[in-house]
Amino acid sequence: MLHIESLRAEVDGKEILKGLSLDVPAGEVHAIMGPNGAGKSTLSYVLTGRSGYDVTGGTATLDGEDLLALDPSERAAKGVFLSFQYPLEIPGVPALTFIRTSMNAQRKARGEAEISAPAFLKLAREHAAALKIDFEMLKRALNVGFSGGEKKRMEIFQMAMLAPRFLILDETDSGLDIDALKIVSEGVNAMRSPDRGMLVITHYQRLLDYIKPDKVHVLAGGRIVATGGPDLALELEREGYDKYARAA
Ligand code: ADP
Ligand code: MG
Ligand code: MG
Image (tube, rainbow, N blue to C red; front, side, top):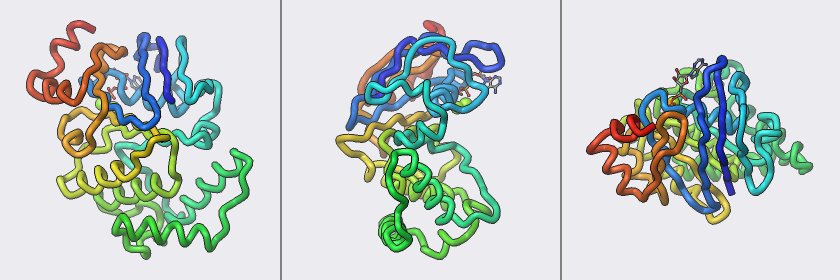
């Protein structure tokens, strides 16, 4: 599924990713942990094509297709979805309108017809019920005045509606209380599927008590410096990143 080889990238002329290699097969959930400033967010931005992040070497492919050659909307149409630490607020645009517009843009880019209004509403009602979201909330401006927990629920709702092929969660657990953490985790776990891959980026082990990763990678100094099973996350929680930060 996702194959990254010797990826190098810089921001403002400063090299942040320094030959990063990583494979996430379809059906698996991989966690990336690492100290602050290691380049975790940079990796998620490079994969989604955010401007200002310049790739200077290496490759990143999704199902064999060169991701780095596509513009951000084309990557979204291929099903790459990034969940931010701080979701956007969009005044004046109801959440449902925003999601329907995104969905149709992606369908159009794939050469598919727009979803009909009744089919969209049916899908929205089903997912809202499953996530215990009040349907009235979906008519309000996206995220404006939403609590932290409501924003997370909305993020999971968007994910469920768009059904991305590859999901990247960048420190989506930061600042969440335990109830919100459970909502996010249950939503993410419900999206596990044999043809979907996920990259869960986190600074803390806590999230991985709820989202059980198949593999855990340590990102330090712009490279993956260690890979293991869920036990590696527990070791990092106990012993910190010093050993890896020094090695990098
Ligand atoms: P992490 O997510 O692992 O905490 P980041 O990817 O956010 O790390 O940052 C990696 C490094 O890149 C840090 O040293 C950070 O200061 C630097 N960096 C990130 N974004 C920018 C930017 N827009 N301009 C300059 N430096 C940046
Ligand atoms: Mg950080
Ligand atoms: Mg970050």
